[in-house]
Image (cartoon, rainbow, N blue to C red):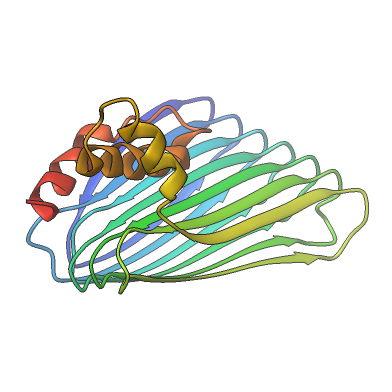
Length: 232
């Protein structure tokens, strides 16, 4: 609704279709968490923003053997803004396929998209993300980050970021990487008396928390709980 400030937290299991329209000057903070005992999880988020609307969106992927996630954010009103944080902690043979589309369809809109994956064992993530600035999107300011950290040899990640820009007078960019656990960081921790397994956890969970650098979400306890179970 107009001129409202709303905060929602949703636990997701199996299939979900979420369609939300944020009216002019309204603010929404939406946090989604995949629940335990989930197997095949299919999530579709379609969020449309009006004039000067603000959305802070956090997605925490912890559970589910196979996850298919499709997120679309349409900034249709002047001055609309969306901050997106997605954190994926993969384990066992977990497979995550995620698609993120941010459509800037009005002037002076802003978006920040952060996707961070930390992958253990044989888990896999395939991420595609696109910033689309239409001919109506002058003075857009948008940036996309898609980073993955491979914690085990058989973990796999694929990131495909893209920009689709139809107008001048915009700022837009993206960054993507797939890296392994840094031996230098491990050495630094061990040199200060931190055991290797604890150092690995500190680095991995700190990496994931970067997903929420633009949103006030602290998911460390949730990540810690899954990490402890995975690394017994």
